[in-house]
Amino acid sequence: MQRDITELLEEWPFESGQITVRVIQGSNQESKIQVRLDLGLLQMNTRDRPDGLRPHGFDSLLDYFESKVDQDEVQSANEDLAAQEDSDEEQYLEKTSFDSQIEEDEASSKTARFLTADDCRRLREEAQQYYQRYIAMLVLEDYEAVVRDTSRNIRVLDLFQSHAMNEDDLHAMESHRPYILMMRARALASQALKSEENKAAILAIDEGIEALKQYYDAIEHPELFEESGEVAMLRDMRDSLIPKLPVSQKAELRQRLEAAIASENFELAAILRDEIRMLGGHPNL
Image (cartoon, rainbow, N blue to C red; front, side, top):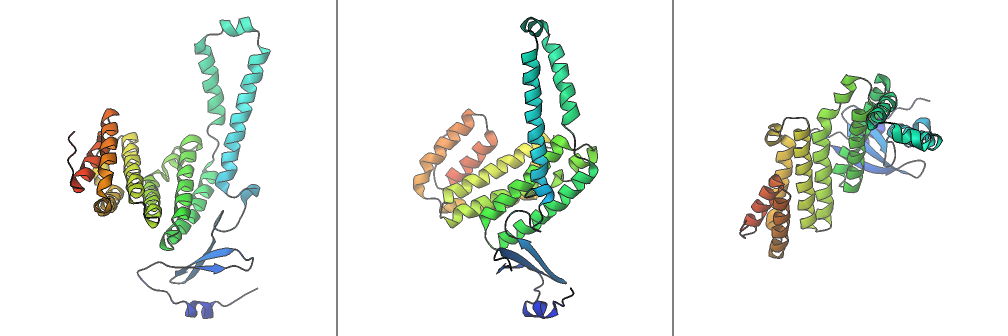
C-alpha cells in the first residue's frame, strides 16, 4: 500500500534550528512520539523498543542478550555446585587454590565473550533508537523516560565491555559514555526540580559529576575531566541552582562535607565547600 504524506507534513511544518516533537494517539490506542524532520517525520513508541519490534520475543535486543548472560551465570553456578557435590571431600581439600583459580579462569574465558561483530552492530543500531527517543523525551520534559532510556544505554556499554568478542567493539560506543552520564544526571536533576526539590537536584548533579570523574580516572586520563564539556554543563546547571537553596540547608551541607573529607573524596568536598560559600556560610574545614 502506498500513501502520500505530503498533506500531513504541510499541516506540521518543519522548523529549522529546533527539535519539534509531539505525542499522538496511535491506531492501537498506544501513545506515539513524532519528531518532525526536514524531509519527513520519525515516529516511535513511548515504551519498550522505539520501533515496536520484539527481537527473539524480548522487549529489546539488549534484554535478550542480558538474559543469555543470566542463563550462563546460573548454568555455571549449577555446574560448579554439582561438581562440588560429586567430588570427594578429601579430594576437594587436597586441591590447591591455584588449580581452582585456573579452572575458574578457563570456564570464564569460554563463556564471557560471546557478542559477535554483528551482534554488536545490531545493539548499536538499537541504542541509536533509544538515543533518538530520550532526546525527544527531553524536549517533552518527560524526565523519567530520559532517565530510563539513558540508564538502558549505559547497560549496553557495560555489556560490550564484558562480552564483546572484538577489541573494536569494546570501544565503539565507549566514547559516548560521558554524554549519556551527563544526560542522565541532567534528567534526574530536572525531575527533582519539577517537584521543587532543589537539594535533590544538586545531589543528582554532584553524583553525575562524580561518575564522570570516575570514568576519566578509569580510562587513565584524569586530565580530561576538567576539559570535559559534559562536566562544564553539569557545573553550570549546579551553579544556577545553589543560590535557590534555603539557608536551612547549610547544616546538612556541612555534614556532607565532613563525610566527604572523612572518606577522602576531595573532589566532592571541594564542590560542597563552594556550595556553602555561595549560601553565605563558612566551611570551617
